[in-house]
Length: 56
Image (cartoon, rainbow, N blue to C red; front, top):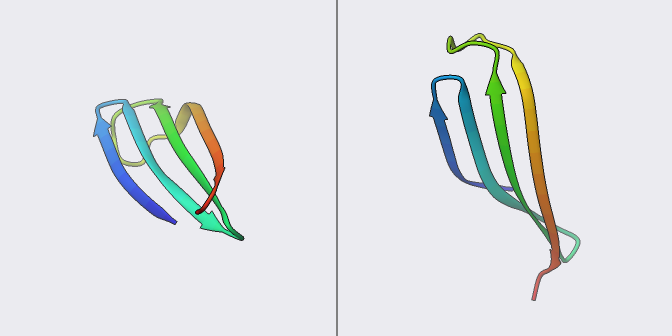
């Protein structure tokens, strides 16, 4: 697994990257909305996008 980027700004955060296993690659992007800005805040909403492809 490789995380390519992480972005945090106030109550919003996101990360993207990919996971390779068994000849397949799954690219992912997660977008989070937090309840509040502190580091101990809970996740209020999560959107996740995945794309599965074969590795050449």
